[in-house]
Image 1 (cartoon, helix red, strand yellow):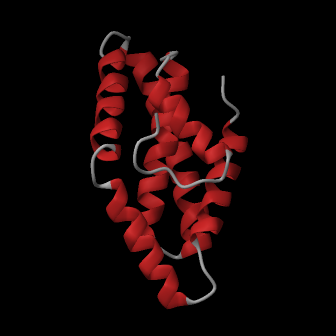
Image 2 (cartoon, one colour; image 1 turned 180 degrees about the horizontal axis):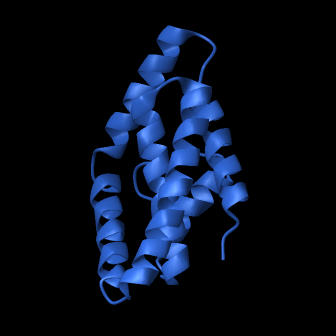
Length: 134
């Protein structure tokens, strides 16, 4: 089971790496990064990973799904707040917090996905994930 505090610290550190000293550079770097995430293969791989997580939830009891969703929602909120504080960029905060939620849900569901594991490793290395992860 992943340690949520460690995951959040890695996401915060990744946000610091995306942030530059010059506000104009910040916006350009972040906009370019967000655009790269919306392109294949990252976008299609992320969507497939999320579909896998959602499919696994369908086989669980309503109580189990509610517990996983509550934990995911809290992690997403925490990650969003951390990234927003560091970068003052709400779109970036949304993307990185969605990653955190995906990682936590997959972990709690026991999903063994090479792509989600690679996403998590990117954050552990404080590297912003985009492009092919595998």
